[in-house]
Length: 280
Image 1 (cartoon, rainbow, N blue to C red):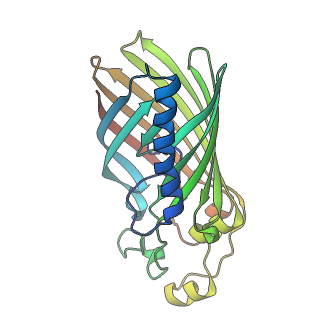
Image 2: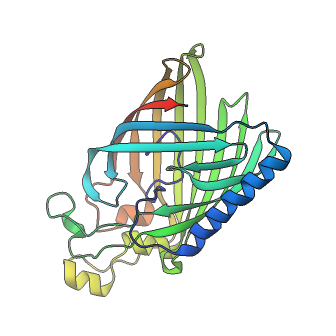
């Protein structure tokens, strides 16, 4: 759980990666230029909005691909820029909303996955000598629906890796945002599920014969399916027109082939996050 809603779960988007395919990133920068040209023509009155966030998160996997069997706290940084239908965010990547109609929205984005570092004997002993998974760019297609002035939101995102052998995953999220004290304090309930194809499940949860020989884990062929679910409850407090604070607690659970994987002793864990944001 990187935020109250974000694309990734196991593969949450970030720009901190060492190896990647240039094509999706080039597409993103071309999209940036095309977007601003279109805004100049038909949405010149739109004002860009920038939000910076700092906080801490209790999770099994941090932004640079380090994995621990037991969740631990790590610092977080967020940046979100929105102008009209264009956005650039550490959570959502760089993208453009192609369709906005009566609560429905859909678009495309380019994001990134930091991969996975080789295991640590203290924090992730079962991943020792499994070998690292290189970071890669992601092509994202997303769609959403919201009703009751944004109180109810449904979102779906499909993330395809630039490295075909890494496969793809689909995330579904449902959220209920409700006021508690007017516009000052609001609450949020969120439920997410992640489905992986066979290649993605094997990359992150499977064990090949070569990996088994090095690490001592048994050979395991992961299958496609729902690999995880996350649910959380959060609070957001608007301090003033610029500052806000958010806190959330929840649960992360591995499912199906991910739950059966020999790589992770902890199948279910409590997670949480606290963030302070400034909107320019």
